[in-house]
Image 1 (tube, rainbow over the protein chains, first blue to last red):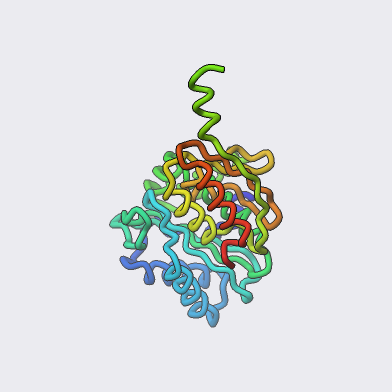
Image 2 (cartoon, rainbow over the protein chains, first blue to last red):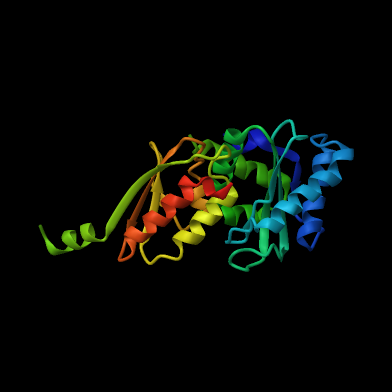
Length: 156
Length: 99
């Protein structure tokens, strides 16, 4: 699966206003609403669901990145939002380091294979030092899109 | 047989186990797997199909396997506690990560 197939371009936030985990999740889902990927009246439910999932176990898997996500019956199509935080956000990451890049994934409930494919695409890149560094350094949405398209071109 | 090869063989354990749970090895199972793997001294890798082996102690690398329900995982451990490691990881997977 290619990242640009699932990343919503309007939901790339080069610098988050939020400074806390829950506010960051909310801000990212706001952009999915603005992009028309999520309905306004579903926003609160999805924010709560992502936070519930996060409370069960942090998706801050280390190296300054986090992948908050949820599978939900009301999500019809997979959507990813991307955000950076210069200051870093406390995601209760496994390595206790602040998180500087977040990829938030909303998945339909009944497509576990697609969900795993998306995670493969996301982690295949996030586990690479250069990708993480370029993502964190990206200061505009266009720079992020360029990075994602280069990453997509490098994957089979 | 040279000494180093003998040593490696004596401390290597491998096992294949199929993923039974419907959601496959998504984030929480990968987290559990890496946590348990991390408790062992042995180096642990996980592979399936044509996929290159990944570090069994890294959640991010385990997620790269995109292992779905029914996928046979090949767990390989090398180190003094390799047998205990593969047994414990096998039962975690075989129990569907307690889902």
